[in-house]
Image (cartoon, rainbow, N blue to C red; front, top):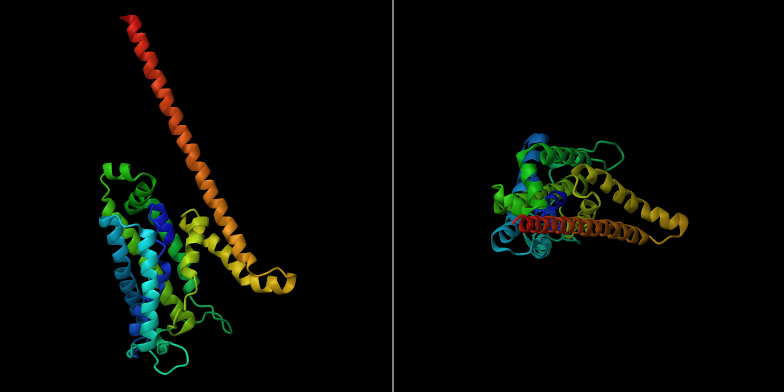
Length: 300
């Protein structure tokens, strides 16, 4: 979701909030014993999660597209609202909350609304494979569809996109809402596959880490797969590294931050190099015009 925004020149960094709203949407029907087959019950949970998060993403999308509000500010603020809204829902909203529990949580999801465990004795569910499939799908969307062409054009040169007939406002809203839906589905997968309930603050900075993942991947959906595996290896191996070698686990964060600095530094260098090329080409054009003018004067 963040990578899609990067391709469009939009910083949709509200994934944390979208995950919370998606989890709430999934819990609305996930805790109910509807008597449906698992596939259908899971699909309805996903649709509710997508709807809740899409509406949540519509707000910063509209503010960015039609009011010129900075999307970084609005998405971060919306994320805080989503976090505290979820805290209230699992603490006090009787239809969903498990009242009287030692820790604020929702009622347990129905067995038909839970993602199946693929490997006995582990917590592996289909979520990671759905994520990989989604990355592949969006790679083809970005590179082989008109929607992808408009998205990349908007990110590369907004003025040229407008002259080419791209409705920038509509495209920005779509990009942010699609990112919100992806975030909402992520939250639904988290609670349906791993948590099996919605807990207060069940997401711990995963949404913000997605920004670093997308940056390292350069906004490429296929690059996200390898980028996220690299980050996951760092996080999973942090505790063992601390025990085996004595290196503090916070070294993971230092490595991630260093990677981000390198990525940003390369982007700054490339932009400066491009601006120098543009300036040199302008100087060459001006020189050619001056030579032409002097030749015309001599001819006269």
